[in-house]
Image 1: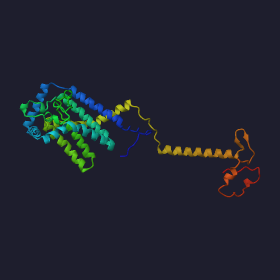
Image 2: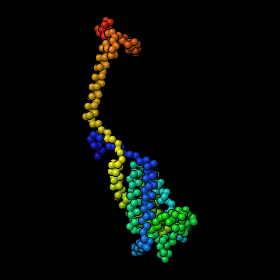
Image 3: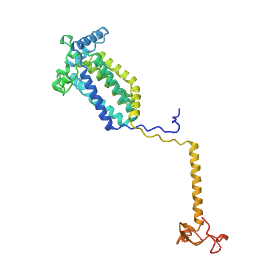
Image 4: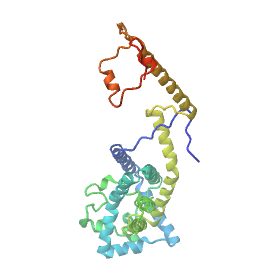
Length: 340
């Protein structure tokens, strides 16, 4: 169906997104998320109870993949050390890289993708608030988990107490395990690569990145399998809410941000009338010039004799050709020159 404009106006142009406004906005959103995640620390005993409940549910459903993976990562440093680097680093690198790539090469898709990511992140923050959960690595050793981040901390930039930089472990909420936004963000990156990558390599990475991330978060004992499932569910909720968030943002912008003035639309009838009026004006102007040329009043208060011409005018008129044939109007000194 062709796009139609409201009669009499044209749609105001949509303002372009600029990196110098997007970057501070992204940093602000992430800072708000991090601060909110830190402030919603729940009761430790309640978080431990929630973690044990999730573990019991997984065992009942035969979904307990964390134990064998964690034993593998603990026993094999060549797997455990790269996995810890993957968990501690890639969500800081890959997610911003995908955002930048979308902003530069898929601009028309960027706003919806960015809004989906932000909305899902804040939905995850609600999950941290309502269900503080102790990750497997912080459970009592009797439950059979080893904290690989602590075991291999001498190899990485993180400290032994958390995946945060050394000395900053106390500034993180270690009981924000449900849902796993590591898995949620990796899933978002995978969807973006699958939809807009365009190559087989991109599609392979789109599948591999969220899948490996899910294995890593369980093998390092940072999340339960159900945390990963919840992370994917949060991204689904964010996807459903993103259009509503964008419409709300548009309404707020329309209300508080000055917009371009509406430009009157020119219809076919008005265009024809305007063209006719222009032609009439041009004809009137030509007649006025012709009358002025035939009149003896060259300028106000300046008289000239009939037939007198401006010096060099005759030479200019006949540079390109011969003299015209004489006509009755040209006979005699007193006859006025014909208008051309």
